[in-house]
Image 1: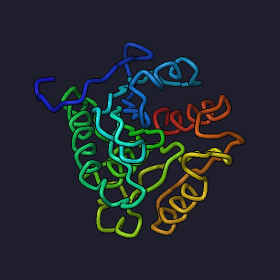
Image 2: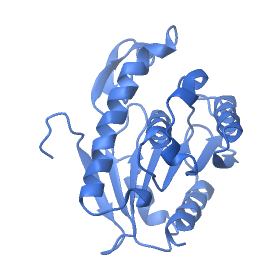
Image 3: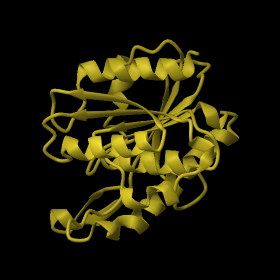
Image 4: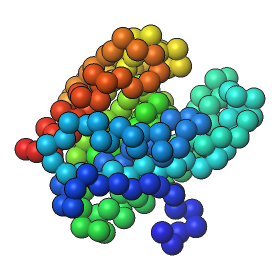
Length: 221
């Protein structure tokens, strides 16, 4: 990619003729390699391309200013301080979406997925994107600045399928935050498939099956 600010990423395909693309964003302190091993475990009925971008490195306030890969800073004393970081990360991932469209993948065949911090970006991008997308997968995450969400959404994705999943004993992002996000999205008439699992801040085998089934609904129809 030519843009010096463009995200580095890993790309993999499950077959030669992918029916669409899943752009999957990792959580705080991880990398694009984090979810790459899950791809062969997904019970997919169609071939898909998976793109796993790497977040830029930045100082994280909640971790004492330690630098690590992150989509945005987290400052519990001032949660809205991350607005600019989130907007920049959404813009960077939107470039990845645009690249896929340029390669001939229709926007409707692009799913935005994310875990934890990555899920925040996936929801932000998916709900606000001006072209219709295939779906949003939001794992162990929440909606940032829920109070002003309606000011940021775009009509193009009013019918987008959303898959939300959370661990009932998540110590990092309590399930209550996920449920609050789900209820707000449902109230705005979004189609949300909700799953919860007996796990912490992670992904479990049962969930991997449900993710594959949900992707099949989008791409195998």
